[in-house]
Length: 189
Image 1: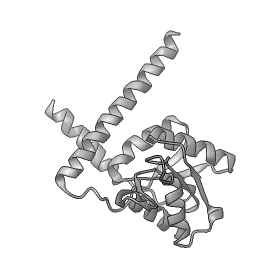
Image 2: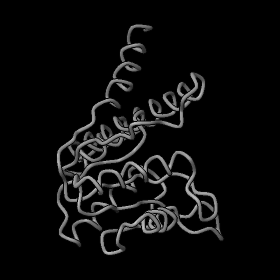
Image 3: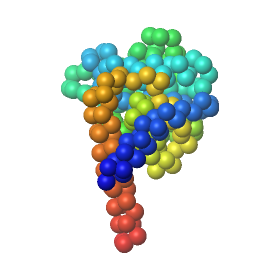
């Protein structure tokens, strides 16, 4: 049992180090919290990494994802769009969807938005420990996507990293079990 858990932990940690430096049509920045009109530190790391990809010619467009956290605050995607525009990215190179609340919704809605805009290849931008689950979902959605984890993480302390890792392992397993159940149901029906 301990060996299986250790193997899973190592697979999540090592997967987050798999950065692809190839070019793509767009970076998809997975949403995170925002505070009023400011991105949270975690979200800011993701946005800054997408800006780096854009400025260095790895992507032509940036797609921001994420709904509003509470009733009166702007959606995370809007906060990210304003942040990027304020740092020199033309609004014509920024796309956003403002209804998604989960990673699966982030990617599904970003894919739909990309299709409407003729974008076919993607670099998925998120925290390193989030990449394994995000890429599994992107693959299941049929997306031509590669990981581009942030080079830094706001989860620096051992406890915060372990909490985030535990959460990601739980959500990964829950997602995988749901996908398995859907496949079984399709074959039975």
